[in-house]
Length: 397
Image (cartoon, rainbow, N blue to C red; front, top):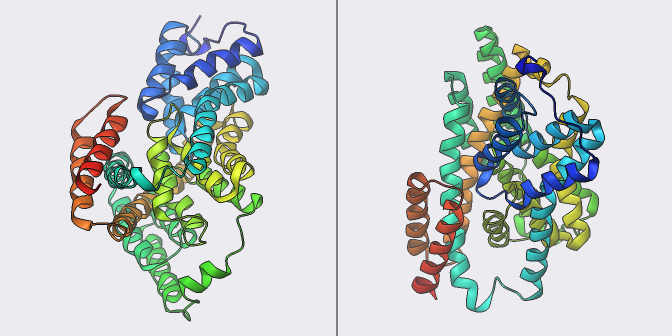
């Protein structure tokens, strides 16, 4: 049998679900560790797919939005048992992290963990998680910014986001500029760049909206539909790693007054120690904004694209994403996302410094960034957060 003809052995839906449930329960350490576990067991040991085909599939998943490890589980499930296999494989992988985060969110708000004796420790952990996000910007950018036009897109997206240009202007601008440049139409790319700058300037010079206090006071409570759309936006715009979902979820929930930046960062801190894709922080955000229905809504929105891409486009993923024009557009969006998330790091750091003593928090965040740059392994992030929490308690408590 040729390597590319390898297929999964016959397997029932329940054993398939339990197989991926086990993967989910052991999914510590972020996407690199999760993907390595899937490769080791399903490709190298059990021969569900050739190594070459797995590498090509992984490249496709990295070009698409969504958590890559979860998308791989859905895809492998489809190979084993069709769309039903994709559904149970994806559900099995995400279920342990979802249940743990749901329980953690309930306990967090039931016992008011964010206040009182733990407040100083949480400030330390929040500072550290900003350092981890900053490290992710470099790591994601190293893989995405492989052309001068992508560097330009990211460099312009950063100040545009800081100035207040919304992502729904920034991302299409990046897609258009790089999409044209990558396909050899440099004159058109320059014209598109000028148009994007002009539209952004027009947006910034429009009549000022009501003040933030007025907007927050007038904001409607978080509805299930609004939270589902928040999750769906994150799921559709998660390029290069789940850290890229952070700015889009934050932009939906913090300005609307549904939670503070500190509470938002608490969710990201918890997600870093859960056996799940980091994007599971959306479950915490949904619970904070809308209780149990909100948690379900955000989680469903976040993971829906991962299920859809792998189940609906199972046989066409490589062809679709391999099309040069489509690939260029996706790369342009990803380049703009790098700039957006870099801007979010600066915004989060400024907001955290305003919550407490700025200098100690900046030191903790800086040391966490250095540690994230040097430490390797699946438990590096939880270790960094634990040490930062202890430092916050000792320094600020």
